[in-house]
Image (cartoon, rainbow, N blue to C red; front, top):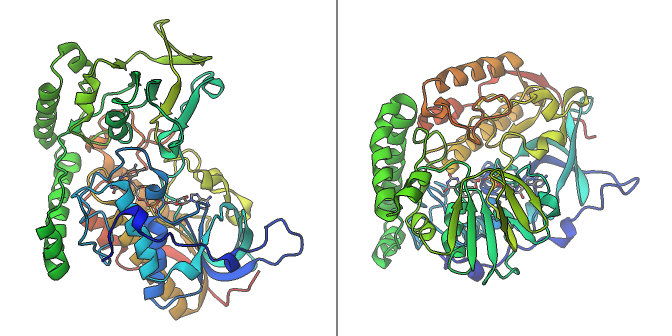
Length: 518
Ligand SMILES: Cc1cc2nc3c(=O)[nH]c(=O)nc-3n(C[C@H](O)[C@H](O)[C@H](O)COP(=O)(O)OP(=O)(O)OC[C@H]3O[C@@H](n4cnc5c(N)ncnc54)[C@H](O)[C@@H]3O)c2cc1C
């Protein structure tokens, strides 16, 4: 196993011959492929690997960025790391005995994903710098016309692996776009910009902000942290792995499997508190309260950092250095509402202002309204956004009515608040592989999930959601524009795996026939 730091791993180069001509070039035929995967993160890379393992080579991975890695290529902010132990937050079929910490840093996870792409020889399939601009269903041909910034493809199947946390969300604050200083989002960190000695505003106290604030605080002259809702924060158990552990996992892979299983089952037990008996969460709230009391002595600051919703309703965060950073003399926690930005000033609803040089947005992502929903046109030319309305829904988070021959990885209600998304991704990958096998075995050219299967499934999910901590009344990014939780899977993850183990053809309308090239 090579060293696992980002800069020691060769960048997966783009195959220059792979770049198709520009989509708008008149008369250029789209390239024919069986499968177009859109997105090169855990989902897209995992899908590509599983296709190859299943003997399917006729596919491309369309990725808008210049490298694979998805989340872990984009989020380079200081302090970025996973909050699920790495032994579980990695592919089961590609364990890494060399993790240097129990919770890996961004660079190490990014390097891991690049290495996965290399080891499985995905290079000939990768189309980096190819941004999906439109995907249109051709009913006659039973194929998708997939247009990208660098050429178009005609594909029988589209796998949407564009990720729920890949589109940075900017807050709707009056005058923000006219801010006269420097502004950037945590997922687009500007490493060229020197924060040393600056007056900096950070907007948001979510999962990213609590990781980068402790790194920004020592550099800046003044840090104003704008908090809408204080999160629940638990002590972090991250530690460096020992050389003994790493040697052990290399020589005895079963030892790492046992640790992975232990992490998995420990994390599954959290579902009892989140979904089955929310009262169990009180114990965790007490631990978080002790953590806050130990780290913040000032009772007034403590009061403003005390969450007012049930633990788990929003994502539970882990940190040992966020609270201490807030106690430093150069930090101000601002809890008044921002009403606008004028020049270099942030204006608050109490009339006060903060003049700053830089604004860092820790304001999360477009989760329930992804931009791809407006790019994909299914039956009758309707966009996914038009079909889904304000509340996205899918069957098993994977198949959507009106979108034949499309599978979505990490679609609605597959998100998690307690364990590794890679487990859910792998469950979906197996489902898709089984669907493709079924298509091949029966000579099927077109599959579309039945609307009644989608409805019944979503009614069941929403019924399961009732009584969980996720519907206990807080505002969170788990909720869509209609206030429904269409983000999380509301049960044990092994139940999701059971349901996705086999492709259930009865829930689909299947049409036999050769797929006619467009
Ligand atoms: C900072 C951060 C920390 C996280 N930590 C954890 C954690 O500890 N544990 C956990 O389980 N989950 C975590 N997550 C969630 C994480 O997003 C998932 O675990 C996982 O990485 C998602 O993989 P993905 O491939 O589905 O999506 P992504 O990794 O987001 O990849 C999607 C890819 O699609 C590409 N794309 C998007 N639109 C287009 C387009 N139009 N054309 C072409 N390409 C496009 C993007 O460039 C991106 O590369 C974290 C997320 C963030 C942002």
